[in-house]
Length: 369
Figure 1 (cartoon, rainbow, N blue to C red):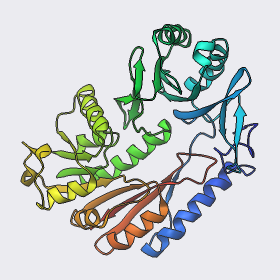
Figure 2 (figure 1 turned 60 degrees about the vertical axis):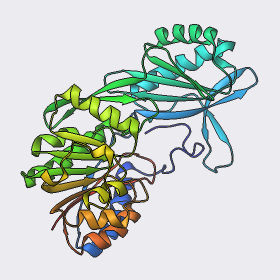
Figure 3 (figure 1 turned 180 degrees about the vertical axis):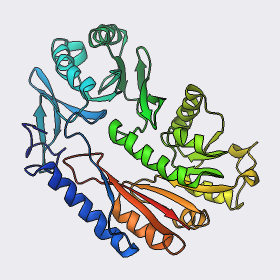
């Protein structure tokens, strides 16, 4: 990626080396952590070096009468004003300049504007959230509606205890996964995978191992909006998927309808609550009508946050024959594998480069009992 802000902007922390060398460094780091468990090779899924990120946030920096995008600097002691960001997907990139130019031409839109968030799809839908330190009135809505039409996007305004949706608060992503098209409704201010191309590779990697099982029921924790759940569901009889976010569960159920999927039960439970429910330690009203005893889980997928899995969840999934573990933190993955490899063997592993030019690494491990 050719970026004129390399070395100044703190968003990208790896620069000045070839992308192949960057990937090799990431591969070596994960291999060094997995080698004690018998792993001597792993698959590497590379990304586009630029225009890969479909979700992005920018500060708005006011210098006199001029507003500009800004990012934290690489020394973490200030900001860098920017006029472009080549890592965002084209549907965001092409709107950045006309958006800031229009904002600078309108005192109403510019005044006390604090930040802007973008959420886009591979089919050119784009949602722009403008965040303010002021109350948004009808005159703001009228001016923002004009801007929405000029940019051919959806705009949301936010301020303290206020949210103004001009048209809609979601975009619909279309992804071709395993030779089939899937639809996902992505809501503003909810978690989505930021790199669409790598996301597809992650899902297809998980599907590859799901098809190796080919029977039984499927359990998923941290399911989000059904990103993995929906395409994987076709390879199992029944699916139980849990997630703590109420908004994500709402979106997951909508996505089931969009894709005509009927064998998934999405339930709002944390990973710890899921473990308590399946171990029959607690009863949850949210599980009313779901017969837990009817499930025969052959496979579980977990995609936890950076903190990794809690010990009770590790003990629970240790009783399931096949484990697909997606990790955004190699160090907590290593910690959890110290326990999981007491009952299971790593059969395959991979890294997925969600964030080129950063030290972030997304990993996948497939284990069998």
